[in-house]
Image 1 (cartoon, rainbow, N blue to C red):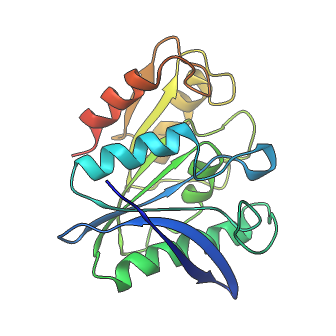
Image 2 (spheres, rainbow, N blue to C red):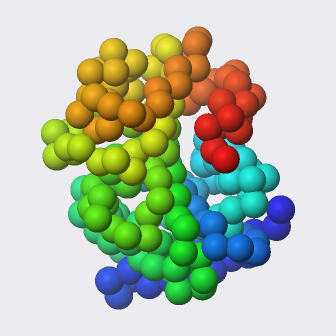
Length: 202
């Protein structure tokens, strides 16, 4: 489905995004991997999330974090990026989307996890390959909105064993889906990831 280029503001910075609006109140903000390592909203895992959510009837908003692509500003170690996510959620909310998912891949999952779970607009959080061996997740305690975590069986950045030990703190009822044989980039496993996400996202 066609996305339109938009811009929204985050603490005075102009952020670029791609928006697809559908009927109803369901929407999702989708965040991308680490901008210092080439991550943008055009990443193939991000695009897979966009496709699945659109197929399920959600309005979708993906965007480039500050300093990535044509978004203004510079990398801010997660603090400013958190504001970018909140601004994206607000954009969808102001456009009539009151039931919002927050879905992120790698660095994007880490930033999303920093959003206060009391944020009333968020219905659920979907985490793809949260980089638990690369970034510090010690800030994250119980968050009932974390509904599903997906990672690859051969992912050394989002290692299954570490995620399995953390998930009981994050939300013991969250579903952990392991894509066997997949590395952090889902090389050769995108179709398997797509199938898993299609089951998880309803």
